[in-house]
Image (cartoon, rainbow, N blue to C red):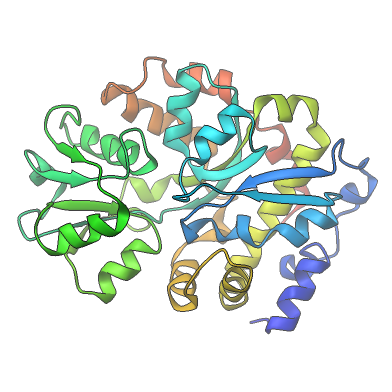
Length: 333
């Protein structure tokens, strides 16, 4: 376990210490990035801690202007990526699949981690089929939570458009309503599950980090704006390298990663952040297939009536694994 000084030193050195080796020669031989500016999204969810602690790694890759763009509610990264307001982003794949189906210029680049979502419910819901006729809170229709839960419902044969009543209160109101039985279920990503457990509100019906089939596929994936990827291939590879190295740092030193995320203002509570980073298998990004993940969720979203295109069309229009395949060889674990 690295101490804090060693952790920051690993970041400053480009992640070499965290990865157990020197900076790859191929990285040194590459030309500098075509642009020195990189824009990422500042999510409210702390499951994407690798993106939050990657700023120094991005700087070692030649990005002198690293920006984290935020919204008032900390949501909506998929919209900003599709609109070109950010360049690279780590987030749950399914909302981006919906965007690609609608023609948005988004390109999947690789997987980040498995799991992080948890479905909390009151005592009237013991399993997913029990959600029929129930009230479920999500931030908004089309949000990350709404899309993921729609995929889950479709997987067990429920129609998310008819069998469940979705409501859209604010986050704080949703947590209160679940405690007061004003809603029946709430799908949250960190730090929501940590807060609900601390307050002893509801019980977990589904944990995407542990429960099959969701635990067999990437949750959050790295994607880029298509124009950025095509115009800046060297910058794209360098940015992806930084994120994958940050992924490894989270796996090797969760304490240091959690402290850095809090120190930099990306997370509010160290205890919740540490619990999250420890529970997510960040170090397994080589073991899961991003292509299988897109195929799996595209099928679920098609069943839910949320996309029209078949999985292969989504993959052909919205993925580019060249950078990932090269980095898998370069960053050998």
